[in-house]
Structures are given as structure tokens and as C-alpha cells.
Length: 125
Image (cartoon, rainbow, N blue to C red; front, top):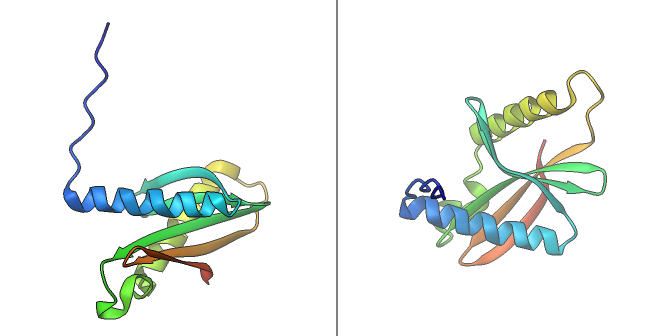
């Protein structure tokens, strides 16, 4: 029997990010969304969670902050970060649908400050 390949070591920061994504994913699933993909990435950017809400695809950025200093978690989704998420979403949709019509989409943010989730629907376009 062959042993399973060892998982790459994750830094404490990466583990905290994984925990935040787990928390956000469970929150969204309880609200009725369904997970399609996690950490979809390319050189263009990364999307933490790709969910389905009815017929709409939801691209979710998860941000966690220990406190509200510097504006808190939601404020950390800068215009540059939004641009990278949009580019990655277009890349994913092109891979998945090609030239066929794309589904309705939106960009949400799950901001986690001091353990409290603030789900910002349609946070940017």
C-alpha cells in the first residue's frame, strides 16, 4: 500500500486564512449557497470561494482581521484586489463556458472581524 502524499506545510497565516474560509463557507452554506470551487487561482489572481446562489454564481473574497484597525476586514478589499478577483472570475468563466452565455454573477465579501462575519452581498462589480 502506498502512503498518501504529504500535504505541504502551511504557515500560521495560511492556516488562519484556511480557518476563515471554512467559517465563511459554512456560513454561506447555511444560507443556502452551494460550493463550486475553493481557491481558484491562476497568474491573474485568486478567488477564495466560488458558490452558487440559485442560478447566480457568487465569487467570494474572505477577509479576516483581529480588530478594526486600518478599517477592518472589509476595507482591506482594495480596488486592486477587486480587479484581480474580476480578472480571475472572467478566466474561470471562460474556461468553464467558453463562448456560451455566462450565468449571472456577483462579487461578495465575507469580512470577519473579531470572529463576527459580515456578509456583504454584491460588494463590488
